[in-house]
Length: 226
Image 1: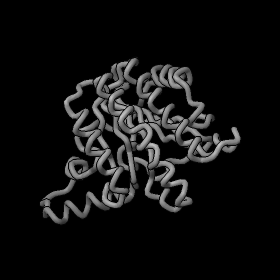
Image 2 (image 1 turned 180 degrees about the vertical axis):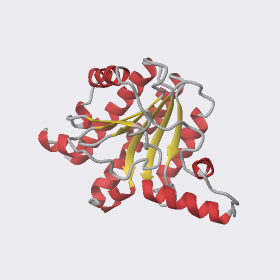
Image 3 (image 1 turned 135 degrees about the vertical axis):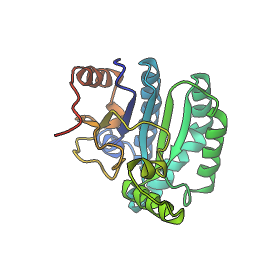
Image 4 (image 1 turned 90 degrees about the vertical axis):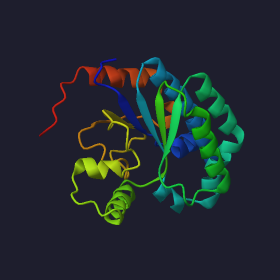
């Protein structure tokens, strides 16, 4: 691991297609994807990464089948407490990024429990990006700036009002699922981020694949311009 690689962001795409290919239902696909996320978090910790962000639920996901949506939230019932215990044992600090307003009550309660249980952990910093829209985040920041009547606005001022305030921008963003788009994710934060589109569905994204991507990143001479 090079000193320059501090933060990897993951766009975890492909759970439903993986489920379909394996003759499983969507909920089983998301369940397998969740287990894989926990495995990748362990690997990031093993690699001494400082920050890892996971795009878990976008605001656009609300347009999906309602049964599938609540199937995703159902996973908290089965795995929520186990996830928290695992993070505490691994000294992982977890924060939630996104709009929590219209999330189900039990999800909000779980979020509060996660933050309360891991806020004193000093190891890997994990961000779960939930009910998130990159455009909406910027709009929210602008409205907060107007409300507070900031006299002069520059990039530092705007960043102060983003959900990600206090954490570094990603050095590397990895998207799985055979798609080559950002899907409204971290639009401000990835201005100079290296982006890797992995031709694999998220449940099949392995530590070996991540290790190879990191090795490729380490060979790059990053230039912050054209």
